[in-house]
Image 1 (cartoon, one colour):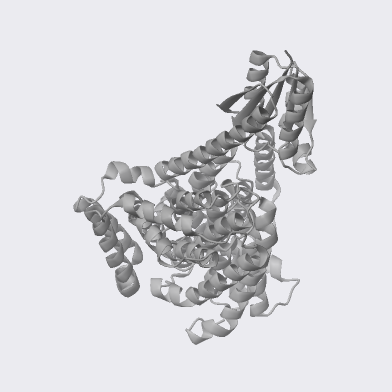
Image 2: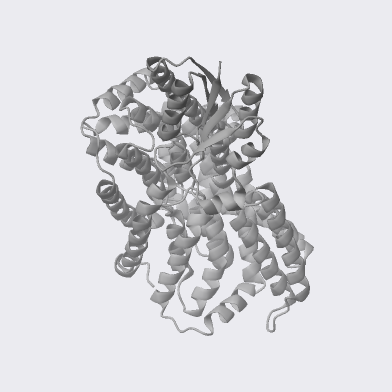
Length: 460
Length: 155
């Protein structure tokens, strides 16, 4: 594996140097040529993942001024983008939810509400993880629910890889978190990243509520289909779930009464969500996120030392770098040049273009990180979409939403990776069934874009 | 007394191999060493994924890592208990060894220490393409092992 990594790195950097030297197409400025070469380098590194994603972004931010695409001040100032700070605030809030235990309590409360039958337990797992992923990152939902679902599986004596119900249970968790993760800006940082790139390149905002109105119907339809796919492909090979019920009750009992820390975090989170929905456009989503994060420490609800361990600071590098690269492609007109080259042999209708770009996002996101998918496709989508007079807002939805819906492979999507690690299903189980869900989600997305979005003012 | 080592790991276990080892031990009146290696590769991969792709913090990622590893250990314990019960009922002398680490390294360590007549194992479930591209731990073990290996292929 190590030799493969070295070989890929060597070939990538050799290719980069060769392109820098010999890639001089007509009609593209020197700045544009270099921006495109840096983009190709980052694209290769993001796809192969031979160095951490965040480090690739960091490389982009250094190469842009070094090669004269952007001046140093502009390149580094893009790290301070509002989307980056929104993501940071949202991650701190999610960390507080996890650290205080309120998210685990919520998950347990949901899981003990509706059950009694094996079927309803599956549905509850799917819906609970989806609902939690509305308000915190999908991977955090998978991580916090994983030990609970593992205990349920153990209490029901489900055999890893053999029990069909075991497979269904873990896929319900993964798919629920994935589907729920596209509903708001909080389920995955790729959504704020797309919003940040939209703002930097076009000066257009999409509100918290606006996003939810456009996307939640897709989420609801997808949850129904996900449950149907699970029920069709996985036989229920157990008769009752009473043992799981007692395990859950035992866990809730162990948690005891709700601590004041949990109550305070819950209240702050609620107020924050209401503010995002009502005041987001007026005072800015990032400002609200950061103010809420600050209030956690002002009121001494959570200690900084512990929250620090819950937040991965690489997120700032990843998203700051991706936004800077997108900005450079736009600013140097490299994206526009690329769009002209890509489109000149084809005559597409705007809707056909949406079909293709949404498919490309779905295809890429199965193999690579969904944030990298957005970082790669969005600058190109903006430029290509512009040639068809498609609003950049539509491009954001057409890339960010499908990019979040990867149902098959554990490579690009942490909830899939976590659930696969349970050992209850094989990759082939997820691929065979997830492929249907991928096709369904692509079609659902397109139907919603064509029929529902015009009703809520998002016109193609 | 003859000795047989049955080497299993989180990703290398099959009822066919276990059955073969038990029957061989009974036939040869050999002592059976049941080795289970808890393979931290997959939890490590998940840990990397959560931190690199998911941008999850150290603490929850590590908690998840330990939770997965704990589950693998418990499963390993259950498998070795089941095999020792079966060995007991077949009148085979047995002992269990449970370790955590890299498959080849841990296997070689036990082989050197216990000096078995033969080591029985299976391959991890992987495609031939993946084996061709990334190599096979079992093949590498075959080259390094001082005792003969019997690889029971999956059906």
